[in-house]
Image 1 (cartoon, one colour):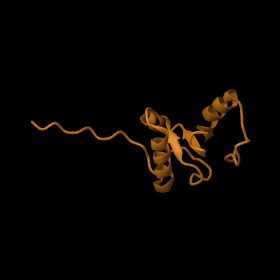
Image 2 (tube, rainbow, N blue to C red):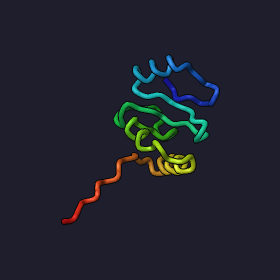
Image 3 (cartoon, helix red, strand yellow):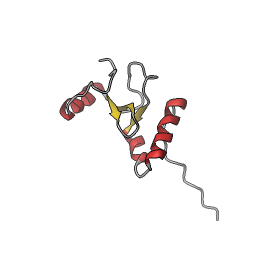
Image 4 (cartoon, rainbow, N blue to C red):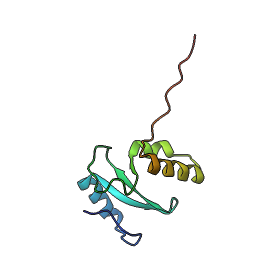
Length: 96
């Protein structure tokens, strides 16, 4: 299935869930980001034209919770530019 080309290629929530379960990913248009992104089950999913939209997995989405809109947009742009992954910061070692 090709990635969506425009904001008007909307599907129902039920169709989105089925697509996500069958394909392992779904293309989402974010009004907050004014951009598309891919929600994938994992980073090893085969996604057509992966350079077209940044790919997020659920653990990355959880790391974004609580950020302000401008912070979300900054992270999103950085992910697009650097093709990176969002990870938890390493725990600081406690010195004794």
